[in-house]
Structure formats: structure tokens, C-alpha cells
Image (cartoon, rainbow, N blue to C red; front, side, top):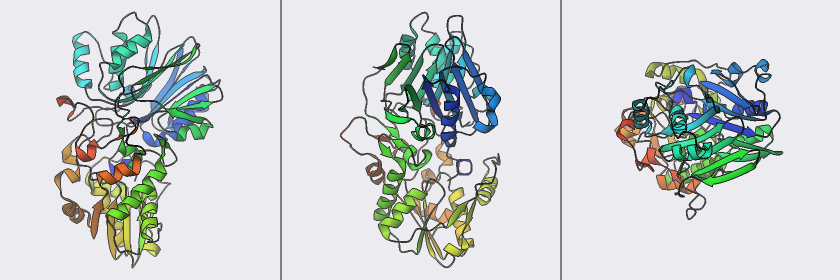
Amino acid sequence: MLAEIKGLNEECGVFAIWGHEKAAEMTYYGLHALQHRGQEGAGIVTSDGEKLNVHKGVGLINDVFSEGEFSRLKGNAAIGHVRYATQGGGGFENVQPLVFRSQTTSMALAHNGNLVNAHALKSQLEAQGSILQTTSDTEVIAHLIKRSGNVPLEDAITSALGMIKGAYAFTILTENQLFVGLDPRGLRPLSIGRLGEAYVFASETCAFDLIGATYEREVMPGELIIIDEQGFRSTQFTSPMQRTLCSMEYVYFSRPDSDLNNQNVHASRKIMGKQLAVEAPVEADVVTGVPDSSISAAIGFSEATGIPYELGLIKNRYVGRTFIQPSQELREQGVKMKLSAVRGIVEGKRVVMVDDSIVRGTTSRRIVGLLKEAGALEVHVRIASPPIENPCYYGIDTSTKGELIASNNTVEEIREIIGADSLAFLSTEGLEASIVADRDQQTYGICQACFTGNYPTEIYPDTIIPAYKD
């Protein structure tokens, strides 16, 4: 479902490339493939071996970049970023990559995730004289790196990573080195590819497909990769831990043509739909999915039950971004502008509406209403994930229990609120079985904290209602 009307948003996407004569152009295309991960800002930084060149701005990739910019983005190495701004985190100053210049070397940093101890680190840095220019977690990482003094940058980065807690996938570019790293539990996705002799890194593998790169492997939890004129090196900056990749990457955020942890997202969503059909069968005439992220699960539900899959809901792909505020009234209007029910398909039918998740319930209520206004006799809602009862502190903008309908209502109460004839969610066991290929391997595993409340890291008191995330 559309993130701007649904109220569930990923923080950003990162991309990096080393050793390609058109690094800026490849990064531009890579960010196009990751545009779904952030629409509020975009930026690219390149290195020509002597200096860092930067261009960034607020808006979509096509709004920020034109052909003229690429003549100034020289170099065979680049990092890029697309960003979704959460509360308190908007504005040009927070658009990444952030660039930090000094007398010795310059450094550009792009980051996906959220640091749960960022507030404490900011207070510590400010007490020691640091002047922070943004409300971004990313700047905290940069200050911690520089605080290490005159030591090799690899050592400074390793020292900084030992102080930060939470979720992070980052890229750091200097005049002559590229650093790529992932948090110790691998909460955020990050993959390695090759484009000829060039190394490529991206939040999702769909970016590799667009530029013609081949997938190599995932960046491992706690891994720090260094690339320079000496070649590719990998180190482990922390002891290996059980991976807990964000389950919502599979449920909603990632594109269906991406592979995460060697599992295709579309295939995983189909399995979720099939498992949902086993757990919550219903007699109906048609199955329809809410475009776009729910279609795979709807197909799986249809295949498992034998109920025909139909396009009962259509997404209007020619409506521009509305910049509407997240009030209930305007959120409902946004749904009506961007989705419509197909009367010829649903009229006089018992409809199974498969969706990926319910956050506030406002959008689900409006879509159920659309289907009934179009003549559906019954609307049975099936959700291909468990109820979201807990906030996420790792880079998704659900920061308080009060905004989550499932934390304050039973399933039956939610059903009444959204106006469905029946409602059922996928179990946490069913979700894990749909995603995790090998539970015995340490590199497999998912975070289900938003469903279970079992957070894989310590949660600091000042992160309960975060003021900013990146």
C-alpha cells in the first residue's frame, strides 16, 4: 500500500560503487531502483581521488538531478542516498550523504537505520564541545569517528562503531577509500554486487538488476568492508551475533524483485499468503490484494484456497504526490485519490481483501468502504503479518503505541472499526516460517519486535519517542 497514505515508512536506501568510470551515473540509476525507500531527499557524492564532489536536494531523484550535475560529479567512486523524513528530521540539512571536510581528509557518510542511543551520544558530544548541524543520527557517527584523533580511519570507524547501538547500514567515502558496514545484528539490509571490475553495494538487489550488476553476497552482520587502491578487504568489528533482519522488509518495504538473505521477496510474500490461507480460511468468491506490496500475498492466498484472484482494487499511477498532512480526514481523502474499487469485479461478490499490515486502521477502513460502495456483499480482511502492537526504534516511523490500532484494540474491535465482515492476521510463527530458510544458521533470522515487543537490542529511555530518525 502507498506509504504516504498508509503511515508506515522506511527511512532510506543507500548505494555505493567503487571502480567505475561513470560512478555518478550508475549511482543515479541505482537510487532510482531504491526510490520506494525514500522520496523526501536524494544525494550523490563522488571522489575523483583528490576531492569529494557533492550534489543533493529535497525531492525525488528526477527533481534533484539533471544532466548538468553529472559533469561536476567526477570520479570512479560514489555513494548515494534516498531519504524519507520523519518527524523533526526534514529539511535540506538532513539530506544525505552528509559531507564533512577537514584539513587532512574529507568524508561523506550515508546511513540507513536508527541509533537507539543517539540522544545520549549527542549529549556527550555537545558536552565535549561538538556543534551539531543536523538532527540526523548520521552526524553522530561522523563526530565519533573524528573524535578518535590522528589514527587510521579504519581504526577510528571501528572505535565509533563500538559506541553506537541500534540499526545501521552505512557507506563512508573519502578521497581514496570506501567503507561499508552493517550493524552487529544485521537489522537493515545491505548487499554486495559486481559490475565488471567495479564493486557495488545497495540496500536492495533490485538496484543491481537495473544497472546490470551481478549479486555476490550479503554484507554480514558486524562486517566492515574497506576498498581502496590495494583492493577489497573485510573485517569483523564485533563478535558474530544472531541475525535479526527487519521482518517488515519482507512484509512491506522491499521491492518484490529484490532478494534478502538469499530469499526472494515476492516468493516469501506468496508463502505468507498461503500460510495465511491455512491459518484463516474463509468462504468467498474472489481474492484481491491492496496494490502494490500485498499482491504477492493475495496470489498465494488464492493459490492455496482455489478462490480466483482478481484485480478488485486499482492504484491510480498518475496522481502526483499530494504532500497531505497525516490527519485522519486527509488520510482518507488520499486513499480515495490513489485507490479505486473495480465494480465489475467485486459487485455482488464475497471479497477477500489481502493486505500486508494494519498500522492505524484508517486506510483499511476506507478501502473496505470502497469495496462495499462498489457493491461487494462481504469484505473479509486477511493481513499477511501479525498485528503491529509495538513501536519500532530501528528506522521505521512508528514511534508510539498510541498510534498503533493493534496495541489498543482486540482483533474483533479492529474488525468493527474498519467495517470488515471478518478479520484475521498471520501468526508470528507463520511469518517466520515464510521467511527464514534455515533456522539453525546464525546468519538467518528476523526481528519481529513490532509484533512481539521482544527487541533484539537494549532500548534506551530517550528512544521511546524519538525526535529524529535516519
